[in-house]
Length: 96
Image (cartoon, rainbow, N blue to C red):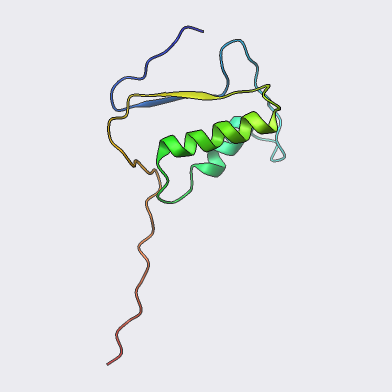
């Protein structure tokens, strides 16, 4: 696989590094290890997408004993890009 550079304002994620294979079985029976953990981590409220990807990479790498090492390339220029914003917590109503 040729090296890829993410265009400005984008992030490209890969399930494994070049010349590697992916683990296709997870307990849910629908997704491989990478997709399973991406879907799990991506729903963290307020978490920057780069931190999400770093967590996914660490989890997948550890679970597969370094047999599958996902990676990503980023052209994002803005900091703190959460895909799920923090929920606004309702404050206690004022007592009259």
